[in-house]
Length: 383
Image (spheres, rainbow, N blue to C red):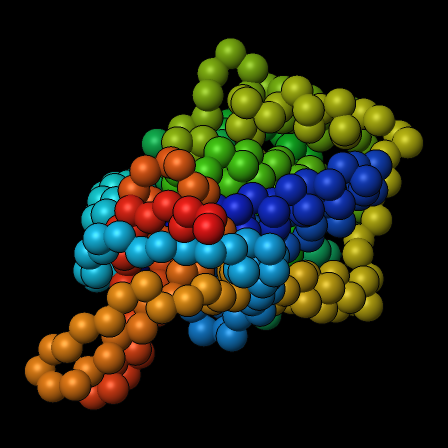
């Protein structure tokens, strides 16, 4: 990978994220479920972009050098032909190493959260209390999708959370004696909404995007916006089950004010209360004018189709190149009568001293290959 390749990749990613951010801004008054769909489209595209760039063909815009520059008289001085892109390839290799170190650290952090949560679950889970069983039965009206949901109690939790993509596990706090039966039902409804919406898989994809593009602040910002929209969408699902908004807001307030929930530090899990987003969620809950509708399947399919077309177009874009025009500036023999014809691929700027041009060397005994040539040339004197 060269510096140009890396820069082009960052430019493609930024273009994608800016486009998605613009769409999200235009739809900022739509429901949280719609906004979450838009944000996740951008994050999924960020994960898929490097793969598509590698496997899809590229569209290159070839630009010719002006005829005046091509027809100008040249005189060739000394020149040295060597492998192209040596300096850029070294810089590109350093970039790959830096990116790999950052991605590895992020992946270790991500896997570390998984292992820590698994370890705590093995040593500190309890059977469900009768109070939580009643709350689960009362919340049975909200479907959980195609997944079989399991429930466990944990003494180290202070707020419910959900974990596990294929085998969802809802973790409930043991220390909830001060909760009313209605509040317990609200908490279970919120976590079931995460399972029904497929938020656990969405959270995994968002975290993967942060691992791959750890260096890009817009990816982190988009992942945070998706997480907030995800929680708001689940809040709206709870309100759709004949829940009074003020009562549900009181539960969130009691969980989030004055402390950060333990579940907020467990990256693999989706928790009910997060101190950093609590104020925004409370305002959304108490705003009766908010759109709380769900996106229709047709709109979801249209969003996916448009996102795929846009992503493919960005991935297939390639930098503009100039057509090779010029004249032979040197010939030689190597291992036989091999003629090397070097054609300058860029506009020459006379009077600037030695300049580096991209040239194509044609050897009669080998396939054409790309080289870099340092040319010290000046315009031929007029007669």
